[in-house]
Image (cartoon, rainbow, N blue to C red):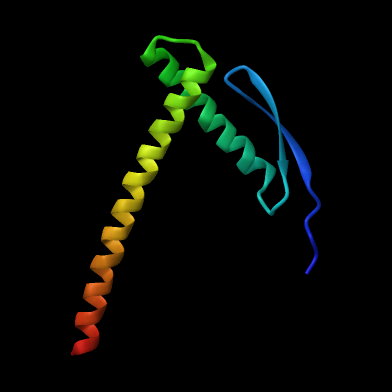
Length: 93
């Protein structure tokens, strides 16, 4: 199994340039897409919060994304439990 060589991808988020070191199989397009999504969310939050302070905007963005993640994870857990119950019922027959 060959090891992937670390590579650096330059991105810009909220007018700041970052060098992202990728050590795994994540494709450059995906890194740029994620950076673009973060940039978009930070700009939306900056406008809604009426602040340009990048640290505050970053923290608010992280909180919003964490909340969305938690909600999606909860929905997935509920759906998994529902499917498990349905499968158990089918296997009982």
